[in-house]
Length: 383
Ligand code: KG4
Ligand code: ZN
Image (cartoon, rainbow, N blue to C red; front, top):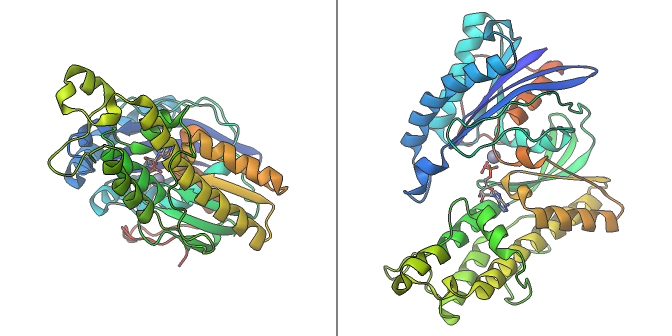
């Protein structure tokens, strides 16, 4: 069976074509068009700009995916799309295209929960990095890769820009929510603190980059809600904000001041934040903040794995791209004799291959959606 999936839940337009049967899976195409540049100057995602760009990129990516897969859309067996959670006006575009193709070619349609895509992505193994997401429409084509269809029971940490949750996974479509964030998501905390520090968007990769070589113990940031299965990251963000003036740094969004990068400082020292010329301070700040997030994510995930008696921990979502998080989660798991699986780096941030993978597993298990099913911006993973 060969399925085409579209992912347009936020600001990334993505299309993938995946073939699978009992003996394995082959990803024929995975195309991602990033819109980061279009939204960067507004300091966040502008829904109307996202929708307009999805409309521009989706047809191009469909063409590219079909030619990469050396197939015609009419020859595919099913069409899938992310139907939530996400921005309503973005979700509608991918879902409408998938429904249109399914109706037009008389094929099956399947709506997929974006979080399930992330949650299953660590089982998409033997992947070859191929999908680049830098310039608009600068997608990539996967050659042959295999994916494992057996979903072993595990405790899954999904950490992205919109969500942070722990899920007990018993098998495909058999999920129990263990805990979730009561305020900011982990990725959101990275993005907001990066903004405060005058760094770029998305904040996670920026903070990870500046944290390299920094002292993670220099600043003692809070590790909130340890002892609970839920998460909270807004106190950590506030702790960073309160610390900055004490160390002579003005957060970029207060008092009409603005954050600057080191390069900007070098061009115009009068606008500088103090750490723009104090690399050590910035590195220590980023490392200490990153470590506070990692401590919370690792501690709660391992505790949940023990409580729910699973011998596998998986992590997925944009934040799971963080190398230090992956390393520390792997070490903590192995100390407890627990297996650890993370999504391949290129599958951590939003993409359509993970949606195609979830769709294929679900179609094979007998699931199907009706084209009258609507998108749901607040779609829950566990009903
Ligand atoms: O999964 P994703 O692409 O989109 C959502 O579904 O939200 O995740 C994006 C989030 C952003 O908040 C971004 O800052 C974060 O993932 N992120 C990272 C890293 N790369 C991306 N966070 C920490 N370290 C990274 N290397
Ligand atoms: Zn995501």
